[in-house]
Length: 459
Image (cartoon, rainbow, N blue to C red):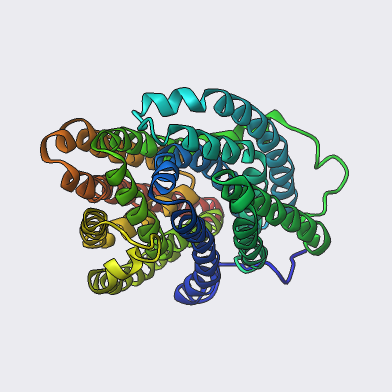
């Protein structure tokens, strides 16, 4: 029993599946970043440079916590994709049910802990005194919405694991429009809190719509008796996949936290510069995120089907797509970088323009390295090797931490601009070696399995 909404990536053209999955996913990421950009534009143009810096000062903390939640949901989707690829639908539904139980508990615990600690963390990050109160207001509300974030990411992750990358995008597009409208309506009476509440409410709407759609349209996910009960075995497997993926984001973010702390010492103008540049950069790196999500689902399904040659073929196509786009993005940002910056603030200072353009130039120069990080890391995650992906995150953390502790104090803002490229290159070196070892091992195991089957038939 399958469903017309699902897509089996274990058969057919790898390139066709990659593009077919990637393009709708990319549209979703672009709109997600579009309303993140809209937040920044509305805050910068209505509340000024200090408020923009206040939101920017929470960026690394936001990434560390929300990224952890998103990573866990992505990890939970991997066993679902693998069981779908293996055509083991009863086990697939049990993984879906237990992912809901586990995600609900995780959402409650994380929300309580981070809401309690966020002011202490902001002080520990050397957040400038003139923006720390606005930073706290904004990030506390965002953290209060963690259950909504987990709800949407788990529901959309389940749909993507079955090959449906289109449906989550439709709901995300709607929530993006709602987010922008609420930004405009709420920023006047609520100030910095308005865009934060707009983000939480729109995420909640997207999550609820995804759940309603799954219940009505996905026949393959309709539980039979006993499949919805919590199981230590299934929850254990989900946590084994999900926690390393969540830690991957958080470990990577630790380096960003150290780096952010170093930038905060430079002053609010430098904070605003890096925050603005990061917003623009995140928009331009959406294709790499879409490639990563595509690689995870593609790798998971083909791993379940034991089609290792298809995994290698898919990786080659994904790397080629990422490389071509990297060249295009570097050219566009090199020519129009300062034009994008002027979208955020009516009259930006010359220092802010210079610093933001520098950040965009140095980062986009190394986008090919980021493309490789996302593609290979998510592919091996989808194949079930989450621990290796975490180790790649450790290399990124060390690189950014080294830049924050040693390079920024010595060389200033230019070192902050080169911290991420250094992190991507270090992660790439590890990931390429890890992938080669994984494929060598899998092919060896498959050859041995075929020999054993042949001997048994002869006997």
